[in-house]
Amino acid sequence: MMGSILTTTTWMIPGLSGLEVLRRIRNKQEYKNLPILMLTAKNSEQDKIISFESGLDDYITKPFLPSELIARVKAILKRTSQSNQDHESLIFDDIKIDTSQKKAFRGARRLNLGPTEFKILLFLIKNKQKVFSREQILNKIWPNQVNVEIRTVDVHIRRLRKELNKNGEQDLIRTVRSAGYSIDSIK
Image 1 (cartoon, rainbow, N blue to C red):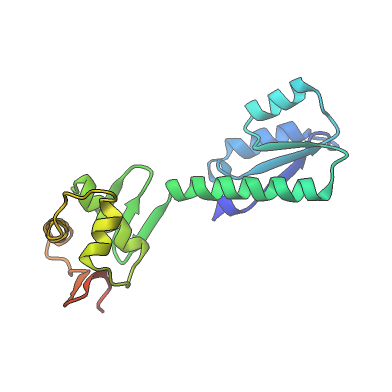
Image 2: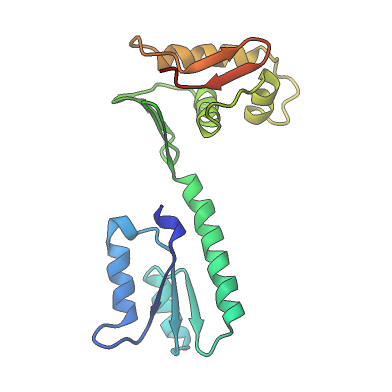
């Protein structure tokens, strides 16, 4: 996963500036979200502004303490990890979910899901092969909602199944008697 790799660059390198390296990295689609930290002796406000405007994530001027570098790297990785979780694609069997666009597909067919069915599918796929009771699903999908009936989960699972299996596909949502629901590939 690209978001978990950290690139460092310096502003002044022979033959090519670190700023130009930064721009080239940011212009490549596959590296667009790569976290970049610049280590440099240049400490003017203008240098920092140009770097951040060019897509830099953090900037450290020399001399620096190793503990500061470690702390900044950890902070960048934490931020980009959380950001990447918001923009990930999940795949289970022939189901693909694009979380950034809030779209789900079964094979090449786009699924026509309501927001609740989408949330349930996302939850089940993130926790594939684990069984969740109606209460657990209810608390995850409708937190702090005291007026939602427990059987509401069944209604949304039924709608989700109907859309997932619209063309006669294998039902991947497993009902576990007296326990709840799971998404599981039965092959």
